Amino acid sequence: MSPPKIELSGVKKAFGEKIVLDGIDYALPEGESLVVIGGSGSGKSVLLKCILGIIRPDAGSIRIDGEETVGAGSEAREKVRGKIGMLFQGSALFDSLPVWQNVAFRLIQGQGMERRQAKEIALGKLAQVGLAPPVAELYPAELSGGMQKRVALARAIASDPEIIFFDEPTTGLDPIMADVINDLIVASVKKLGATTISITHDMASARKIATRIAMIYGGKFIWAGEAKDIDRSGNAHVDQFIHGRAEGPIQMAVRRP
Image (tube, rainbow, N blue to C red; front, side):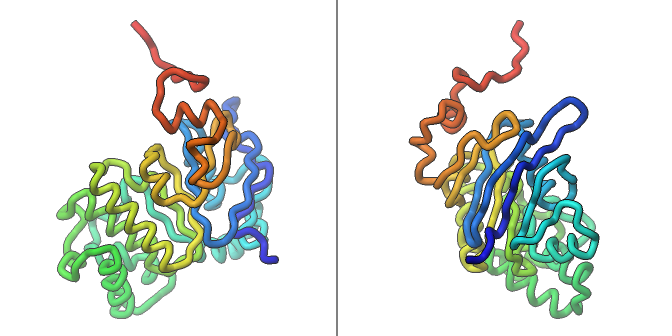
């Protein structure tokens, strides 16, 4: 049997006295879509950065295709990163580059691809997310938030990655556009056969794009299972979070008058 696409074992990370990750264990099979939910400051972004290799965990193992990445050399890390696409929170497009160059940035700068070939690929990816060729010549400032998010998705899939990370993919979008982006994510991932990890507060998005959901609280995954089982998790923390209730075991730090 092939190893999990991504496997986390005992992953820990602290910043000073603040423990953010306190022993994360999870094995994600190839082709599955995991959504990590949790409140602000719960460690979702730190976990993503650890998997990406941007932050080194204090302890634990992170394996991709069975290969250890924690402590790996620069060549091994670059090999792993070559398998990964990323849709950043807020899209993170380059304001000074036209849309097609944003989409093709990795192909040109990272892979040394000839610009004409890279532009053809970029146009194809833009079409895949529903954007016509004239949009390719515009700059990010000329686009709506929803169009910027589509461009960011086109960039994330430009190199046909095996793994895609989505960081709050629907933040700042109205509910209708958020659902459009969710549908595009599902379609794009299905076409690639990619394995994905997403982090979000948006339960509508989580339900749409996930095959599996895990909730992080207190530095650990306190519940993980198939997306279809989230409403009967049997976990009070999960139940409070997915229904957005103020009352429950999760107590927000709110200063009252």
